[in-house]
Image 1 (cartoon, rainbow, N blue to C red):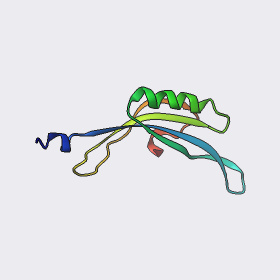
Image 2 (cartoon, one colour; image 1 turned 180 degrees about the vertical axis):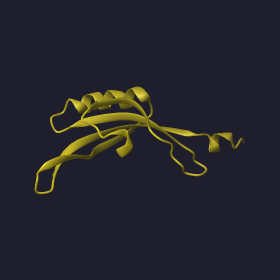
Image 3 (tube, rainbow, N blue to C red; image 1 turned 120 degrees about the horizontal axis):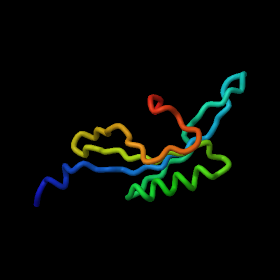
Image 4 (cartoon, helix red, strand yellow; image 1 turned 180 degrees about the horizontal axis):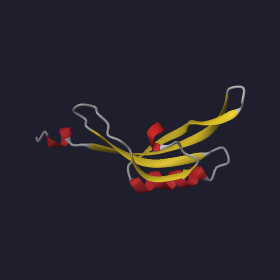
Length: 93
């Protein structure tokens, strides 16, 4: 049995939604993560983000992929498939 499959990079496809949250006395809105869904393909994550973004309670949605090194547990930076609506800046991610 080969150890190559055990050490192979794992790719995760994520749909993440955002909701607006009023903060402080000024009532200024900020974004917080609403829901997260994991899928086996990029198309599934992107389709879910597109559906979620149409919802009234959803301020915005991202579909992205991340790579994970199973040996170290390290996760790479997200690679966005689609960003819809009001989403945080990439630096805030």
